[in-house]
Image (cartoon, rainbow over all chains, first blue to last red; front, side, top):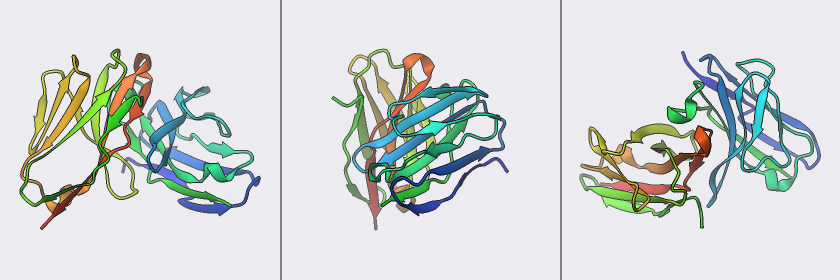
Length: 114
Length: 110
């Protein structure tokens, strides 16, 4: 079954404690992306990757890091989380020309930073 | 001005009604347009792409007006299961950047 998985699905943490949210896809897609969704602001892109070892900043990259060492995985790293990073995070994937086609989203990770 | 703007709603309509949502975008160089559906805090899923000539998929019709820079979604014969948030999505930036509207909430009632 084609799917995008994210872990953890829910996380409560404290300010400054490094965390990683994993994203994995089994569809052999080149394009992967991270979004955060906040009330009244909609989905905003954090980082995206067009292929292995190729990553670029989205609209709100501050406070986040990503890596793309292999095609199927695209982890999101918060080196020193702060309360303003409390949000609902979605990973999305698609074929190389993904932006012209459907993006497939993971189930979301709800993060609370105290 | 936001790049993509939508009326947040909620639109409360009776079952069987026809409802229309509009979305405006600010970048005249935008290339492609989509409607996504999002159920309560779940992941967004593609509902339909929007083509210049307009397109229909069952009870759903999407229209694009490039001159006025707006996109519309029409839902006929609303079902309870249509209750969701509808996200207007615009592709810009040479094909790499998808910008999402904040969504319009639809509630279909008995």
